[in-house]
Structure formats: structure tokens, C-alpha cells
Amino acid sequence: MDCGLCNRRGLPESIRDVDHLEDLMSTPSDGVIETLGRLDGDIIVLGAGGKMGPSLSRMARRASDAAGVKRRVIAVSRFSSEESVSMLQSHGVETVRADLLNEEELKSLPDAQNVVFMVGMKFGSSQQQALTWAMNAYLPGLVCQRYAKSRMVAFSSGNVYGMTPICRGGSIESDSLNPVGEYAMSVLARERVFEHFSLSCGIPTALIRLNYSVEMRYGVLVDLALKVFEGQPVDVTMGNANLIWQADANAMTLQSFDRVSSPPFVLNVTGPEMVSIRQAAQDFAEIMGKPLTITGTECQEALIGNAQLCHSLFGYPKVPVRQMIRWIADWVARGGESLGKPTHYEVSDGKY
Image (cartoon, rainbow, N blue to C red; front, side, top):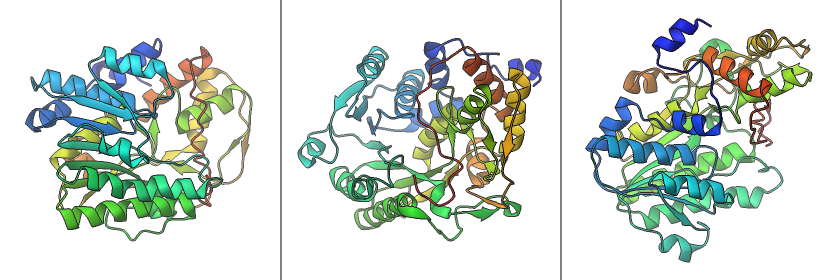
């Protein structure tokens, strides 16, 4: 990696600690500041206690302040972490504890003209199918009824496309959908519920099909780095993956408020590369000075999305894959914090 190029991008050569990471991931781009400067009304982030929610909420707060717009930014979650609550509040984000499947608690939430829907269940979905469908398909209808006069930006997943041949260059938004497994099917159900209420109630909506967000503590690259560092074999049967730095994904999501419509605007959010799992593992091994054991042979299909539309609207991600690899290699080698939430990127049968 050319560190001179890295510096010209305004990126640090390494990430010191979690505070540095959170600051970096919540820094709004010029595009986010411009979008939230035009947007009227408060912003409520539902499911803000997950992996992406805290940094997205902080980014919305920072962008609004930078644009000179006075608004409430409200983060809603069950919030298992007191540290997360304190961090958000210290940066001007209001927090509300709520179980969104409890209709009385949902009804009692503050009004807001702009809703970011980040609630979802993936990990453990094969063992809790009923809860998976309740969270991913039933709850969106309740939220649409509660916020029928608001704008919606709702997270979905590239898993709704199913496996696609590598030679195609990834699925585009107009492709037929072929979800595999109950998780992916429930995510498609989520989209259809949002589509129904968007059409029947006139709710301006954007659906964000994300694959795969990455930061220092979780993501496909973290999974690979930990395997290499610990001397575990790396299976390359699922030979390629889409990756995007979490801050870039958050920025593109917030800018999607400019594109909400009825019927919903659908957008793939990911990086421009089909990242080779084998090459990324080799890069980690070289940087870390570790031996590498590869197993399996690359199949010719993968869960790959084509994000050309997103990049044409909002520009390319600010953080390239090679920089993520260097950051994560350094972080893992120093014993940096991990969320302990593997992505299961290697899964091809939809069982999470």
C-alpha cells in the first residue's frame, strides 16, 4: 500500500484505539452534510444499538451540526451496553430504550420526519426462525404504521439476490431476486412490507441492500485476519465478497434521504471490487509475517452486488480495501478489541 496515497486521501496510517475508530467512522462526508442540510425535521434511528447504529447516529448529529441545522437525532434500541448509551449522549444524540416489538413502546417513541430502520436479525436465525420473521417481516409493518407520515431509509441485504456467477460482475438493483434460506427470505419479506406501505400510505422510502460492512472489530476482513493471525486454515470455497468501510456505508445510507420515493428507491451499497478471499488472506499473512494454510477451491458463484448506481450518485468509498487490510492487520496484531461476531461470509446455503 502506498502510504503517500493514503495520506493524500486524508486517512491515518493506523487506528490507535476505539475512540479514534469511533471518531473516524462518524466523520460525515461533504455529501452527508449537504443532504442533512437540505433535509427538514428530526431523525430517529431504530435499532441503533447494533454494529453500525452508534456511528451512523453520531454521523447524523455531526453532519446536522456542520450544516447549521437544529434537529433532534434520536437513537432507539434495547441497548445492552451502557457504554454505548453514554457515548451517544455525550455526543449530543438522544437515546431511548425500547423493545420495538412491544407495540405500546413503539407507539410511545418520539415523532420524527425521518426514520432510519436498522433493526434486523441474521446471526442465529436458523435456530430462531419465528423471531427472525417477526423482526425482519412483521416489525416493518408496525413501524410503517407508526411513522406513516415520515420518510424511511431501511436497511436490507444483498442476500436477497442469492448466488450469482462471478463473471456477471455482481447483481444490480433490477435483477430478479432469489433468496436462499429463511434469513434471506425474511429480508425479502421486509422489503415487500416496506414496499406495500410505501405504495398504500405514500411513504417516501429507500431500501439499502448492503454487503458487507467492515471496521476494525468485525467484518469479513476481520474474520480473515483473525484466522491468519491464529494459524487457522482459510477456506476459499466462497472465493469472493463485497466489502465497504462502515463509515462509507453510513454516509451513503444517510445521503439516500435525497432519493426516497414511492415506490421505494432501491440501492446496492458496497465497494466497487469483488474482493478475492485468497488474495486478502495472502495479504494478511504477508503483513503479519504469518504462515498461511488455504483449503478449498473457489466456486464460480458468490453473493456479489454491483454498486455502480450508488457510486454514480454518491461517489466511490473513501477507504479502499487495501487500506482496510493494513489497518485491520495492525489492529489484530496489537490485540485490538473484537466484537466476536463473525460474518459467516463463507455460508452459501443461507443458514445463519
